Image 1: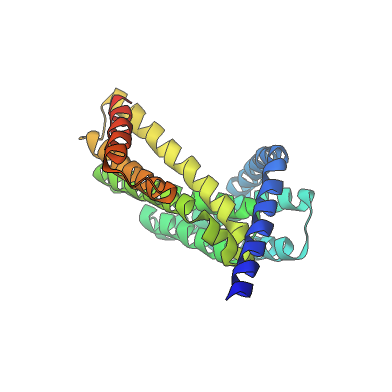
Image 2: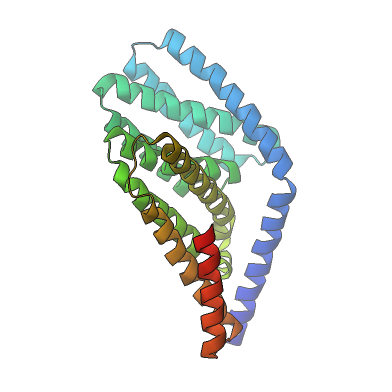
Length: 262
């Protein structure tokens, strides 16, 4: 039992070390994202020029490109290759989605296809950038489904889900990092992408509130976030061993007051 606990601690320390190294290379990753994005734009321009009406060619080339990306990512560990894989991955996803859209003329199916691609890549690779982009695609697809079907009330559900999942990621960080090597590698990009998606969703809701276009009952998202925040705070209070009722009431009241003011 003691040996298993020591092994778990060692695995968690290794995972934290890998996470620290990931943050140290964040500047390079940002440049990689920029380079990959512009490279993808070039490839997508090629797609629209030469594969304008060929859905089959677009899907076949996209699938082949996706397979090459996953194979290259598993075999080579190099920043230049990672950047090329990232741009190729975005281009492959666009090609497959474009081909499906031309063939079926259905936005929902196209969006679901993007979700399947993202989930498949997340399950097949441990690359930081590919997992980061895949989680962004997955979250963006959920948002797209809401917009396509004019179900804007579900945006409050998305806010709740994103906030809750991110909170659970934070609460169980140590356990997830110690769960295994693959989990420790994909944990950080998933969490960061989820946070970016959550912030972008809140920004959209804020803009919509100013414009007054689609959403109603904006307070629903606020109540959900406050509830999740108090749940997280309760775990912190329990972890710190604060048992006295007066102290707990003071902490919860202060936190709730701050959240209400915000």
